[in-house]
Every structure is written in structure tokens, then in C-alpha cells.
Length: 265
Image (cartoon, rainbow, N blue to C red; front, top):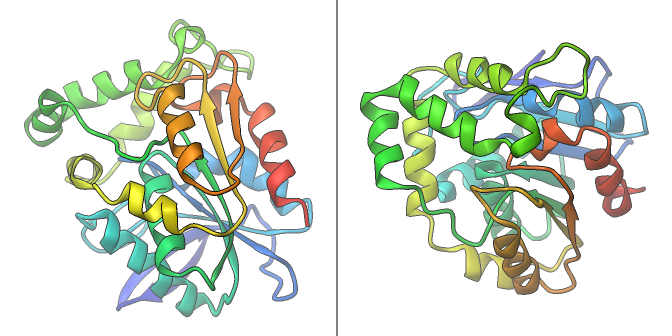
């Protein structure tokens, strides 16, 4: 893991074991609610060995990054700008999943000169959160984690579904959520529920953008992905059959293949 200081707080970044090369194009990978950089391990490694700086980060208050979690998508988008300044990165392509995709969308709208391309996975113009889940995230964390893990995976991911032999996607998702620092999941869900600026941000996007959805996503349905793609000028939409909200884990081969179309140097 690499570290950098942003506003006096340590931020952790994974570079897939590769040195960051100033002359290479850079990808910044933004994880979803209650998660961390590890969700990007396979696709980020794919790009790190294909001529990119691939930096998967832990957002503030997540994983190994210090500080409290930020409570608004706009604040996270501005924080991404400060991170890029700390890393001395002038141009970047942002890849976000779920909440991370909202952050990427908002960051690109606010900093169009800095963002070269966008890939938005498992997200929508708005991501309302059921009041019961919001309440559980604050008072019954284990129940909230169980609800998210069950909703996040498509039918194939429920009994096992891991492309790796012997793997269990549902159990791995529960472990991922359980290791998040206290308060992170509740803050993230509240930030998603409160975010209403997706339509305005989408209308402002001018960089190449890909919208990627799982056909079985119950948290950000494919129809919502279609609405998002239609709101961004020239944005194609790719729907992966059989994938749920955690399409990164459920479709580890198809996901980077789809991203290569947008991000090929």
C-alpha cells in the first residue's frame, strides 16, 4: 500500500504492486458504501499490467485511510480533487462503483479539465436508500450488512457464485462490510440517500463516459443505468448478463474487458 497526506490525514492507495510512473495515464478507482480498495483488486491489476497507473484508494474513514468518513457526495468529490493535487496528477480517469460512481460523476462535473474519462458501475442518477436500511446501518450494523450483502448479489451469487473455485461471494461480501470502521456504512448510505445533484452533474459531463450495469442489479437496476447513460452526452451503456450490484466480483472477466473499450490508451 502507498500512502499520501490529504488535509493532514493519511490516505491509503493500492497500486497493484507496480510503481507509479509519471509518464503513464492514471486510473483512480473509487469503492462503494462501506467497502474499501480491495473490491478493485482484479480489474485494477489488469490495468496496472496493461500500461496504466491503477490506484485503488480507501476513501476517508475506510480501510486504512484515516479521518472520519465524509457525509456528502459533494464533499467526497472535492476531496478527490485534493487527493489528485497531493499526488500531483493533472489528468485522471475515474472508475467508480455505486457510491464511488456518484463521487466520480460529481468530481468530473466539478473538475472537467482534470478528468479524462469516466466509468460508472452499478449506479444511477439518484440512489435512494430504504429508511429501514438507513436505520439499521446506525443501530443494527450486522443486520444492515446482511441486507446489503443479500441485495448486492445476483441470483447466481447467493449460493456460491464465485468464479474462483471454493469461493463464496455472499460470505466474502459480509466479511468486507464487517471490517469497515465504525460509522462508515451509515455515513455512506446517508450520503447516497441525500444526493440529488446527479441530473445536473450528468448534464455537465463532456468526457468519454461508460455506464456499466449488472442485468440482475436490485440496488441500481439496469433501467436506472439506462436513464443515467441517456443523461450523459454520448455515453454508451453495457449491461452484463447475470451480474448483480457487485458486478465487479460476479463478472471479474467481463468487467475489465468492458472497461478496456473506454480506456484503451
